[in-house]
Amino acid sequence: MAGKETARLCEKIIYSHFGPVAGKVAGTLLNRGRLQLPTLIRFTGLKPSLVRASLIALIQHNLVWHAEDTVEGEVVEIDWEECIARQRFGKILAIAKEKFGVQGQEIISIILDHGKLRLPEILRLLNKSDNQKESEAYTEVALELLTSSHLRVSTPASHLSPRDKLIRYEAEERKKHVGIVAPKDARQFRITAEVRIRREREEAEAPSVGLIKRKAKNKEGGSGRTKKRQIVEEDAIDPEAYLKVNYAKFNIHIRNQFS
Image (cartoon, rainbow, N blue to C red; front, side):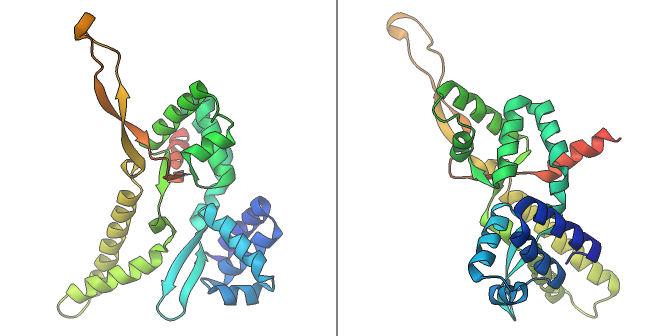
């Protein structure tokens, strides 16, 4: 759960980006912690339809985690770190243009505006779907953004609260331990759990997850009757994969600017 100052800042960011209704929903979650949907509706005093619509928008922008609480059941909570990253949109767009040109900047911008998107949706929103030459050029840049980890694939696991995994994995480590648990043992349990969570997330959101192999024809080789087309495979973005901006990668570039 975010601290008071962080919660206040996140609420202002969401209010600014999504409006007062989403701001109130987010503020309630930030100040009260994870909540069930009926409880969230009661605390906000808003119509259920408005709360649900706000949650859908926040989930689309990767700002809300889903969790299964052993006591309360299904709950939602705000990913405050994802929210804070929204302050750096200007720098992210500048870096995207510097490293990937105007096309890269436009791709990043449309994802920041609309949340996670599939490649065909990105091309449609950029009005590039009907122009084959432009579509192929933007597709190539999107592939470069993904393989360089400036974009990541959004999976169902991306919306699960890591805190729940941390508690569960720590409990598993405790069960393996024989004897009295010393403070240093407890610290090691947490470290092991955190490493496991980080590894799982990296594997789930690795660039290869959003790639497929497609056949590509090389230039014709040989001459006369021996002329043949060589069929090779190349990487391509899975059209069903949802792409999101990898803030961590852009943060590295931002830090390097100050070093």
